[in-house]
View 1 (cartoon, helix red, strand yellow):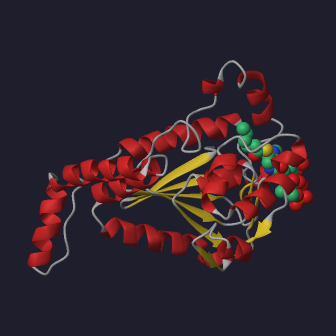
View 2 (view 1 turned 45 degrees about the vertical axis):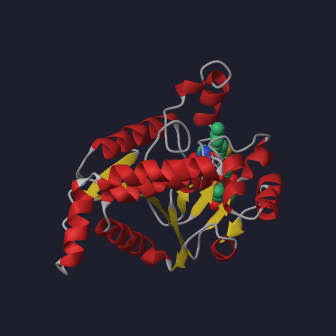
Length: 258
Ligand code: HXC
């Protein structure tokens, strides 16, 4: 049975972490499957938006599997950091948008998966945290870097230094998640957001994500150059020609990702 289920609904790819008995914690095999599924998504022209969620009603993902993944990393990280399959948390560049449908606990590496997504929809019952310091580690899938870039520094420090989880409402209040909905509405809300994004020009959506993420590490001047380059590229695409034509013809555009 796949540890990462990969389903397609129209232009939307749905990735389900499928280890509910272990609260969807990520063992090495699950990380490999996540890598493979996301590379297949990246390379499939028919898929425009991805949603990551967890199986069952308790957890999105309780982090790296402490009994399987952490020993693997302990053995490999010092000399072979690349042994960890590339994922959006680290090493896999993915400009197609990702939505985290946080159906329950998002702890440690689980929250870090959600942080590597662009939009986060949380269940009212979700709890989010980075408990790694309580194990004697720090978040190692980007949490020490992405969390302080996303929420006020004092809240990032609170979460990173105490390891205590926060509830979904608090996560919303500090800007860590986009929406909080009843548990049964998490997936349908994520699908609605995905469908809305699919209405826009897919190449433009990818360029917007690339500009936002790469730009955040640049000076304003270099960021504006990046924006100009991406805009010039978009203006040469069939999709932009179609978008402008559809506007003048007062109809919906028929984008082709070309
Ligand atoms: C392995 C895990 C797990 C994990 C839960 N389980 N989290 N197994 N790794 N991260 C397993 C339990 O062992 C148990 O299996 C089953 O899931 C149910 O969990 P329980 O602990 O029995 O449930 P409960 O008492 O309700 O407690 C829930 C919990 C607790 C508070 C979430 O499971 C917990 O503290 N889990 C660890 C969370 C954590 O520390 N995450 C960060 C990991 S480090 P059995 O077989 O006993 O029934 C990390 C680093 C990432 O993510 C970066 C690396 C570079």
